[in-house]
Image (tube, rainbow, N blue to C red; front, side, top):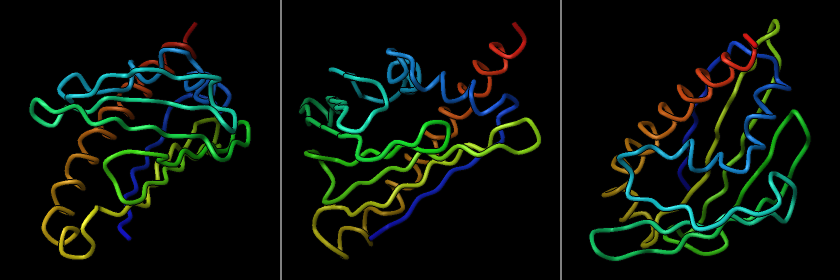
Length: 152
């Protein structure tokens, strides 16, 4: 099992950062423009049971990815787990904690690449670099948008 974590301090209260993540268009906002991903649907926000569906284009081939929210504690965390998709296993924890009027946002992912340890050895570095680029982008967008909301 592989682990990835990205954390940053957002200059906005937890309630603001949480509310930003509740937006119906949040997946479109947080998907980097260079990623070959299309959001198909997102239902019921952050609550347990909510489904998000994506198409990831690997060259000309679309791969369907469906994730289901399995935990939600308002202003603290929500968790999504892959129901079907390209990974052997995928669990993504979105954690929010207050730090002196700001928000520590942490994305923690446990995942396994199909093919076992050999695939993880060959592809793990590549997946890690893609995740790092994606979450750097997501946290920059979150910082920018939540600071704008705080200024209003």
